Length: 157
Length: 109
Image 1 (cartoon, rainbow over the protein chains, first blue to last red):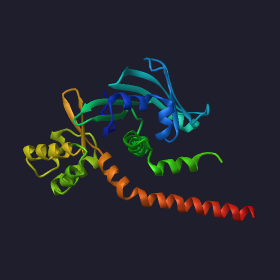
Image 2 (cartoon, each protein chain N blue to C red):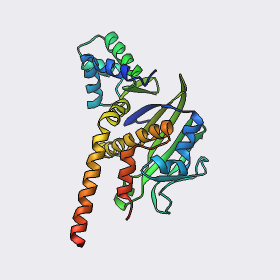
Image 3 (cartoon, rainbow over the protein chains, first blue to last red):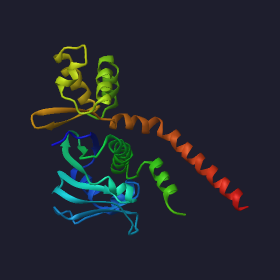
Image 4 (tube, rainbow over the protein chains, first blue to last red):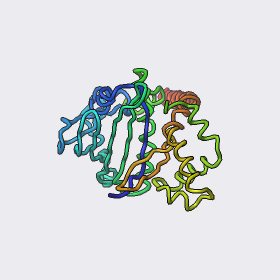
């Protein structure tokens, strides 16, 4: 197995079940994940799709590799927004949830099987605000204001 | 508590620990042995500093077989950014948005 390109760890004041729901339910991902709605039946081998808000525009896709609620979720991932993005091929995203002291959950995100350093850098930059927004959303019920605003700007008029 | 900002700032207050983060920034995912090669510190000292960084969540670790790999975890620094700088960024976003609107109105008018 190749060495993972990067590993993010975030401690979130929530329960593993709520965090699991936030990672797997489209109605929740829409609120903090650049407005992406995730959809899957979460059985191994099933497709995972990200849609833009309520639309049927697929932005990213993959396949469920591992699903052990509320502990571990692994899926392959490929951006679908353009032919160039598709050429990147599938990389792999793994979430591990562990109970931590004082009502905190430790979330470990590993993104590996990335084709090159440039792609890794892009994902690294992409994940940081998503994780920040996820934490803020679970702890306060609101996504990060700046992310919300960027989303609003990106939305078609 | 692992997310305590005190732990983050205390961990960052030491130049040797900042150097360790620099090494991981240059090359992520190193073993203790690899980190020791480039540093003028005993293995024991490096190991101790890594434990402090890990407690502060500035370093995340994963196991690959029998190797423990160390990664620079930018999440706590991102939280510091969101707390004190994100606000200004937001204003910049808003200012750009206002400028865009004004220019478009000009064009249409």
